[in-house]
Image (cartoon, rainbow over all chains, first blue to last red; front, side):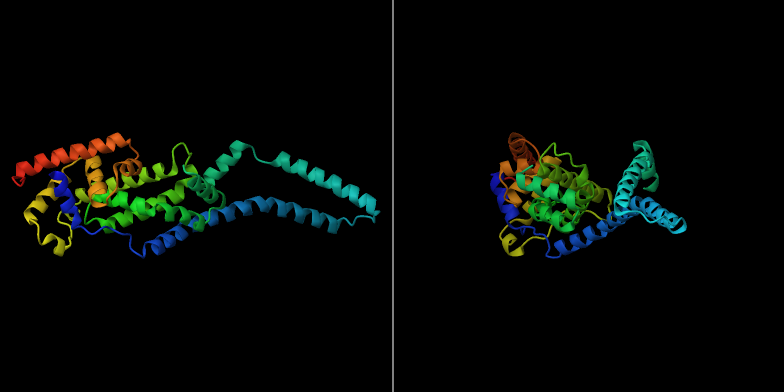
Length: 109
Length: 182
């Protein structure tokens, strides 16, 4: 009996539907919510590139001030390889420890 | 998590693109809305839509924290259910902004019925527990089967069945007390 009452009772209520504007509104909200994410990603990129740009600029300045003698192409190649290895080693040595990274991220947030 | 959901979640986590997230929304928005509307009841449709939007925004911001220990849909529907319950409690706590107790109904369909009986049934349904009331709305209003209700509310089929059984029993008693049982 109660089963029939319930069926009859709810028959009069129209079945609810999401409004047609729902998707548009949600998309707008999602895009607004995405902007801070983009800013965060951009800031991370800047932090990553700033030291690189610094070292490149420093090397260019040294090259400009201290004019190197003319080298043979083979010498230039060897020096480029050695310089790359040295740069990588320095970069690894200067990379902040995990804890430093966590603290820095916490301060930035 | 179904393969399709797992694939979409992974893709969104990797790319972070709104378009990838919208594919998940497309798949689940109907169920999320139905869960919200079944908690809020007839007349709460616009609030249910707001809840649906809030749920997807919350999931969008926190999907990276989803550990995949349960199915994505179970996780999502649980958020929707809890959000809708919060909304219902907040509405009841604000007397100036209550949930409608007398929802808008199709007058053509209701003209042949007893409005007093309808009101009594609405009041009795409002007195059920959250699970029972939601199950009644999902089954009798939105036409979901017991298995579907169990999936949407993240419970065993037996639990959903017991909720419906207990709800019918309590509603019969409640109507009897109000003197409107045949």
